[in-house]
Length: 335
Image 1 (tube, rainbow, N blue to C red):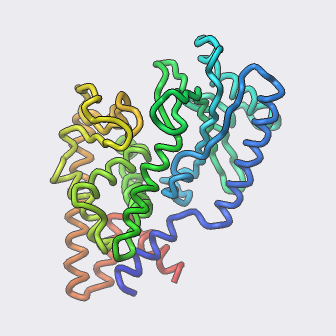
Image 2: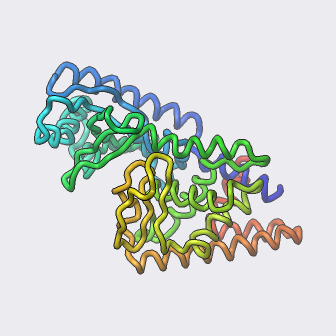
Image 3: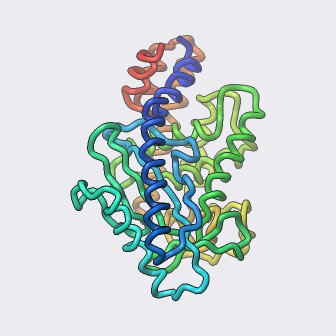
C-alpha cells in the first residue's frame, strides 16, 4: 500500500462511522424536538431555531478515543426583543432546567451548565456529549444567524452558520484542486495530531480550524498530496509564522476592526473580532507548541524522504511518530 493510500484510509478511519453518526443524529433530534415543545409550552422565552454547530456540522469530527471526545454542538437561538437583559442572562440556567425535564432519569452530573453551554453526557452506547449553547438572536448583525451568547464575563458575538461556512467554503475550494486533499479532512489530521499533545498543550477545535486555514491560505491552497499539505501546516506553525503575530481572517469583518492584544498568541475568531481563540496560551505554551510542530515537520520530512526512496514500511513507522500507532493499525483494518 502506498503512503497516499495509507492517508486516504486514515482520514476515513478517524471519521466517525455512519452508524455512529446516525445514532448521534437520532439522539440530537430527540433532544431538539423535546426542547422545542417544552420551551414553547413554558413561554418564559421564545425559541427561534436550533442549529447544528461545531465539528460535527463542519465535518471535522473525530472518532472517540482516549484523546478525542465525541461531541455534538447545538446553537439554540432565542428571541431577545422586548426581554430585559438581566432575564436573558438567565438563559443558561433556563436551558439546563428544560434539558433536565427531558431526561429526568439522568444523574445530576450528566447535565450541567458550563461557561457558554449546557452539557448533556451519555455514558453508554456511543458515549455522546451534546453541548447546547443559548444564543440571543440578533438579525441586525451583518452576518447570517448572528447572535449573542450570554456569559458571566459578558455577551459574546457568534454565528453558527458563519462558523460552519468558514470550513465548508474552504472545503469547497479544496475540492477544485486535483488530488485527494480536502480542507475539512486536513483539519481532522491537524486535530488528531493536536489531541495527542500533552493535556496542557492541546488547543480547542476552533483553533485547529483557524490555524489550518491560515497555513493553507499562506501557500495559496491545499497541495495535491496529503503528505505535503500536512507538512505545510506544521511548517507554518513552526517556521513561517511561529504564532508571533495576529492571525485574522476577513470573511466577515475588516481585520482593521481588531483591537491590538497583549496576549501571547492571537488567533481571532472569524466571526467575532473581539474573541481571541488562543487567549489561554502563555508564551511558554506558544514556544512548546511551536517546538512540537517543528518536531512534527522534521518527522514528516524524514518520512517523505523514505517514501521517495521506496522505503514504504519505514516511512509508515515514521508517520506513526506523528499520528500514533493508529496510522498503521487503522489503515490496516480498513484495507
